[in-house]
Length: 211
Image (cartoon, rainbow, N blue to C red; front, side, top):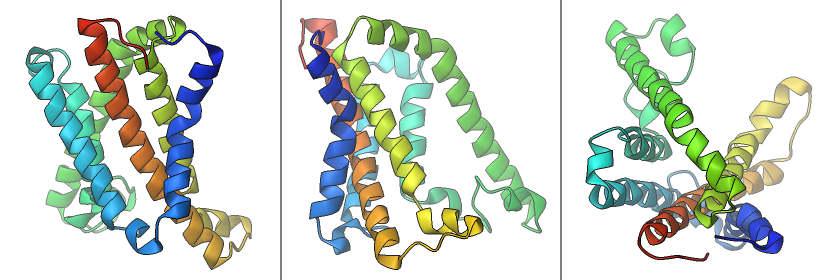
């Protein structure tokens, strides 16, 4: 367990700081949409789903099936599968309110239901365990929290220029592109934080493990 408040603060902000560093230092060509960094994030998320299934097969095909499924859904989202195969993005309202083919609407609706179902199971089954681990200052739980903060920040700055246009704010192209680079880096930081959390949780099951 991580007892020092300084260690906890490090765990909390490390994923976002690492992601911001990646976004600031790597060449733009590596951080563009569909570039190597985005691919690395998707590969890491997919690898974590496979690792979870191999380490905890009973949970994967039992009560905790939603955990590797969420990792696979995030991997698919990182690869833009949510909008690559249909007329509109699965998470966009106009797919269901517009003139998209009925089959697209049904497929998109099923995926949305799956996402909501997984999210509900995550909150109901794993939320209390995670909160208990946070209060106990378990390292894995704090890495999950730090990774969550990183991905929330990444999604907040994603498409900042487009989001600010309705407010009459014209964001310079250089700033918008820079925020896009930071977003890709923070998403990789998020996936890395989940990997560290899984390793620490695995260690905790075997021997005492400090982050």
